[in-house]
Image (cartoon, rainbow, N blue to C red):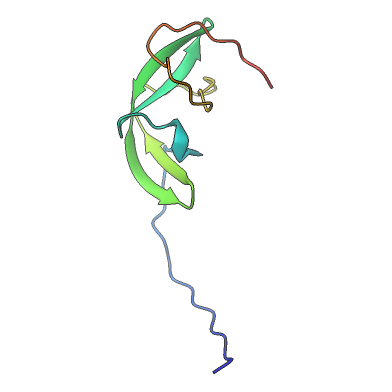
Length: 85
């Protein structure tokens, strides 16, 4: 009793993935990016989890594209959005 043990074990090395909050995932396989102020659906594959975050991979993801991280009821392809910092 009262003893603490530190345990370390190797994890999988992920490459060509993006780490995002799990809340950005819709239907288990879709995220939305913003292109010309409109939402565009991107199919992704969840390849791992880390707490409240997910690691996703997908051929449709482009480097530097803004990802919608705020959930709202009317989300869908083509919805006009305003990006705020």
